[in-house]
Length: 259
Ligand SMILES: NC(=O)c1ccc[n+]([C@@H]2O[C@H](COP(=O)([O-])OP(=O)(O)OC[C@H]3O[C@@H](n4cnc5c(N)ncnc54)[C@H](O)[C@@H]3O)[C@@H](O)[C@H]2O)c1
Image (cartoon, rainbow, N blue to C red; front, side):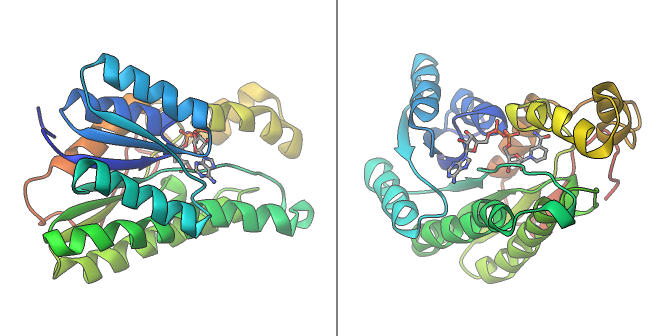
């Protein structure tokens, strides 16, 4: 067990990558707070973790709501006594060429990814700094390093998350807190399934071409990254035994981006 006793706060844990990370942490002995705006999704993953014999709690949280984030994180610290790992993972995707991109949608996407990461970090370090330890893990993307058409909001937000993580590596260091970003390539989750027809429409190509060319065209082997791949990197970062590894981005993407 690599995470015995580790207390982890994971946002967007009700689906996709966040859910897989929650289950992987539970299998490694962590105590997990599954946070999501989707109450039923969060409770379902808590039920799965409990079935594995892990201690887990569901937290209803909109990551753009400062008071909900603060109250949720404080409730986790009250319940488990500490917070060791933050996984800021909640996210959405909206794709449009910029001339058709509603400003409200740009702001919504950036608020969930970037404001949400800021608020969660601020709430978690309040508990990590006094204990002089903690691991901040951010869910970036290959789009923290590369750009794609139609993704002005997402690419801007994911680049911003990488910047936030690097600042936290510097600010957290004297408090024993490290910060790193996971930057996956395409993973077949609900967030990606939804994009395939949308990108086909906006780019005027067929859905198979979106998969083969847009999503996997730059990989070395035309393969999707899996949720298990990303969860394994998260376990590694949470369990790393020192703060040597901080301010980094790790890119599980089948070679799409070579860092
Ligand atoms: N799937 C991919 O290919 C891929 C690649 C790189 C990075 N990512 C990132 O991984 C993260 C998870 O994505 P996923 O593919 O698992 O998507 P998903 O849609 O399966 O899961 C996202 C979760 O975030 C939750 N969420 C959305 N808005 C929220 C809010 N305001 N407050 C709290 N929770 C909220 C949703 O309810 C959902 O449970 C995102 O940050 C995404 O950008 C995904």
